[in-house]
Length: 353
Length: 271
Image 1 (cartoon, rainbow over the protein chains, first blue to last red):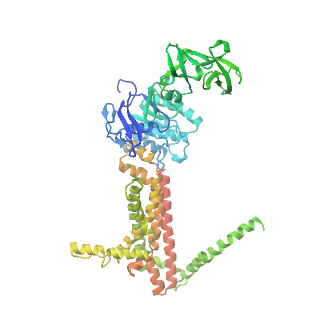
Image 2: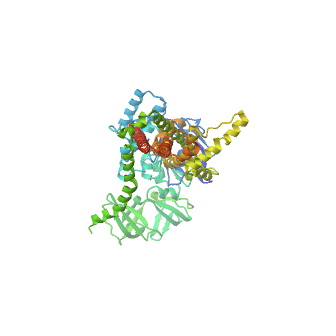
Image 3: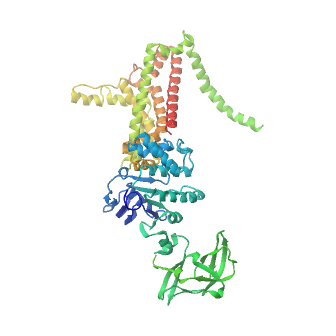
């Protein structure tokens, strides 16, 4: 095994854009490096180009001329998918309905001419790994959604792919199951340590699974970073609003303060801007007595969520401000409260986007 | 009037029509078949009488060959037409399905124009080989005719089935390393199997029972419908033609049931 961490191939896509025959630009030319063993998540709303990028990596789409796909430094751009040794999990799972669970998992090995005995051993290994023992002889239409998802993953991993590609593998499941399988999938991907590209529109999935997250918007890469980086230091308003909840405040800045209808808020440097766009995460705002904070407003509504409560405060800024307060805080609608925000929690964003 | 008797009353017209136009003639046909000099044994004549047996084998072989060749041609053409967009596609599909409207007589006429004594193929082969190739008036001409009117029936079913195929299945098979041939063999053809059985059954049953084309081409082609016709009109042999009719129905039904159960169990065994 190679000395570097993880299994599988390293990957680079170079200036890969995609224009469809009808002229639609699905992906602006993009360059990305993915390390061996890394899990990279492509995150974005539908139509942002994430699936197109995945399909270019898989070999199901050709990039526009000039684009290149390299595995371990080797140019794979014109190599068809069947010779790229990628494992792929589809949103619909695309399990073969005419084969049993075991035959589905073993299909890639059968195609590769692996002897039946060895194949059975590998299938048994994956059945154990993905926790589907006892289902080997079932037909696909006898499986639940969660079981199908595991079979699809086992089938993709069975061929020991250089790169594992997952296209919204949890989207077809209901919410409770999705949360449980997300944790399971995370442990499995860590255990396998294969280079993985994971496409999703769900930011919670991206946060939990990704070593790095690529946030995409309208065919371009909006930001690349670790989950912490994209959460705490978004580089655009789009990223700030797409990842988690965010208060976006437009206001003039004077001597290092946002000047707001409900008071002033320090931003941690003494910049002067005619107007700026600032982001403040709801959980970084503390609700205090009106006198103890320079900024105050009136509580519009209180939603008790269980582990916390969400307050909507008006009058502090020109827009409503959302605050996530601990569930122990006593707060009533109509009450006037102070909002205490540390200067580091205020993130200035480029005002254009 | 109670609700129940009202429902029964509504069913009455259906019952009358079914009895008058289906059950009674069928019963009469079955009875007639047993009224010949041999009695009920007349039914066995279709298997024991060498001439009838040969005709039966001929008919089944012709229908089977028509079905198989139709399925092959229609699958390739249907898959291509469904998956590709090109200028003239709509016109091509319209032309392929055009023969649906033709009666067997017209099909026979077309075959004569193509492979008859004054036909196109004869002309061309005469000029190129010095010999006139004429096969319209034989079982080969009949085969060509059946092919011509089976393809439209089958191709529409296949195209609908191809449209419903999940492209993801093919992509998944390819991602696992399957060559284009292996994808067809392991994924596409099994997924189309129900369409093959359904449309193949129609092609087979039509080829077993079609009469107009055979009658137009020649009166001495050995297929069951022609035999029934000659027994009935020329020999006035009512009981034999009735027995042959019932036999034709049962054999066709039996072969279709066999194909269906075979494909059903094949799917179950594979899945």
